Amino acid sequence: MRQPSLQNREGTEMNYSVIKEYDIANGPGCRTTLFVSGCRNHCEGCFQPETWSFSYGQIYGSQTQQYLLDSLEPDYVSGLTLLGGDPFEEENQEVLISLLEQVRERYGRSKNIWAYTGYIYDRDLVPGGSKYTDVTDRMLACLDVLVDGPFILAQKNIMLQFRGSSNQRLLDMPHTLESGTPVIIESV
Image 1 (cartoon, rainbow, N blue to C red):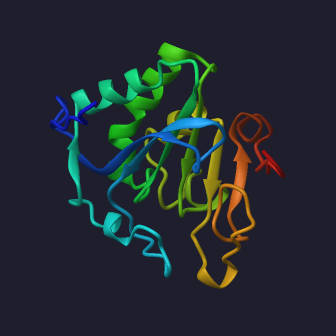
Image 2 (tube, rainbow, N blue to C red):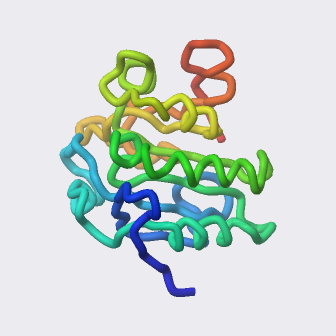
């Protein structure tokens, strides 16, 4: 299926690098993965430094969003993963909130949603944090798992499941939001 790209109707623009269907590396099961463009972390050893640029790739728009929603339809697709770039850059949050809420509306919790960020949840994504916006809470409420923390080359560990360096955490977002403190998933 050809991946479309058109500017969002709302005029907010976000680029993306690629959409991967049948991805088995960025969360459990077979997934659809959206690699957004734009990241200010610039981690040494990043596996996709081209996505640091907000203008890299194709423009994400309403047709792209519909393509993603439809790609989740088959029963064998476990869910959606967002990474990049960084989905929690302010500009990207403004666009991605619509996708996340539509996934929840259409599929409920039958499809899980993972997101990767180089920011730290309890420092950067909470009220007063450097990446907190008026839609951050809504985004976090849609997630099942948030993999947080920058990739640190000196802490790289290829034996870790679904993360690249030992400082990164897999957070159970429903339980984290309910308890008010990070709930770390030990194994998936």
